[in-house]
Amino acid sequence: MSFSVQTRTALVTGANRGIGKEIVKSLVTHGARRVYAGVRSVGKAEGLVEQFGEVVIPIEIDYEKPKTIEAAAEQASDAQLVVSNAGVLRVSDPFAPDALDNLRAELEVNVFGLLHMARAFAPVLKHNGGGAFVQLNSVASLRSFAPFATYCASKAASYSLTQAIRDLLKEQGTAVLSVHPGPIGTDMADTAGLEETDPPSVVAEGIIAALAAGDFHLFPDKMAKELGAAYAAFAESVIDADPMEG
Image (cartoon, rainbow, N blue to C red; front, side, top):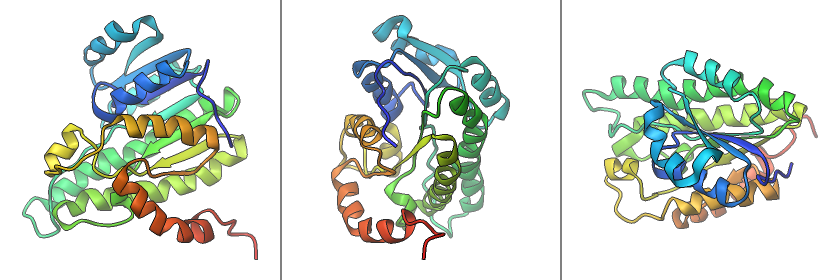
């Protein structure tokens, strides 16, 4: 299902920095009528308001506080596009002393946060004509990397949920996009010790284009494109196939 962001009302979580901030910028640039900037504290969105004016509306969303997500769904009841971008990364291999604690923290945000967002905003999108739901996953959802294996596990789970959400929301006319960036120049990349990165703009602009094209997967940057090309045959024959056919 193709979706144009022009004149639409969007909501972006984790909007105050990195990829989220760039997504807000791209949405405004491409003609979105209103963008709710989801942040853990509304004061963190002041810079976005100063830059873009009243088209940006700060809204509290903390994935570790599900009540804020429920309240946001009521406040942003006109949302036609929801971008679930917020996430956390803890550098932890499976045998690290804090591996279990890190995995729990990452599951809380990266998996349960997605689930809370989808459950809260699916009825909103349906009421507003279907719209689109975007989940920021990662190349780490397809291939684990030992130094931050717990993060990879959480993203593999979020990608699995995204597939199920896609299948269910299709019935109400909601497009779903699963985004799989590789190393992007953000604070998260710094935490992971990644040096060769692409700018966040490639993700933001890629989302706009992928929504317009009606794609389910987006591999926006150089590393991601390489992995996406290798994954394409499997995705076409398994992930994108109708399980009821044949």
